[in-house]
Image 1 (cartoon, rainbow, N blue to C red):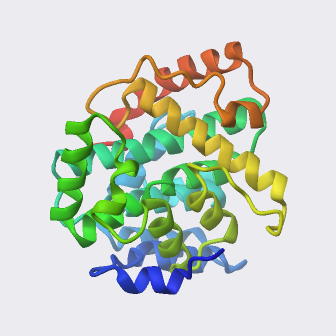
Image 2 (cartoon, rainbow, N blue to C red):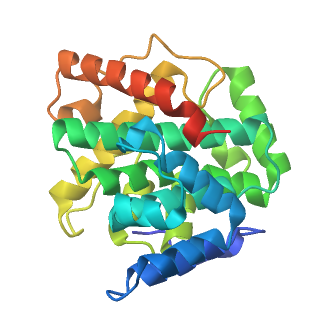
Length: 285
């Protein structure tokens, strides 16, 4: 990788910190002797995170058979890997200085891609579902960081892209020194996330995975899963001002990597739209 992540991070004028509750929960989950009570107490130390987590845990997306009323119950029922996803999602939503329409769209895009990635991973056995959820959640972390560090520049970027009818990715170099994929990967690297999540974030658009990476094929399939979920969001208008119904994703590189035909993708589109619509209010707002 030619770009040095430390150099990228040093250019960010106001780098958001890793949410404190998420840091502590991840530390606890690495301890084989941690108990549910301690995990629950740690999460409850941040009322906003704990409220969001309980709300999401009770969504149909996680298919719990009965209502979860306490954090300890949630911790006991969802399992450690799902708990990790829930806490990171709940924490990331709060990582904004303000929360207007743009921030809401960014968050909807993150959650839509996370949910879509998890659905695709389960439906087509293309990746581990929980890892796919996090990879989808973090794919546009760079955009959140850009908006956090320089909201004026990021708002100008979004408006320029909308006026020109093109994606923000095509204009990023006019407003920021690095693309959002590079920024997101650099921040995840600083936060000590796995190499897999760093690389899937870095390459979620270009799908160029170096043969020098470990488990190249698995990483490529994970990244293609996230890429395809992102395209589904664009087509359905998730996290956007309007849907792009004309977008043809059936012959996309991601679909080819995952060996999916038009019927596969059409079925996935229907499922993702249904699941997102049913669970939107649990994850967003």
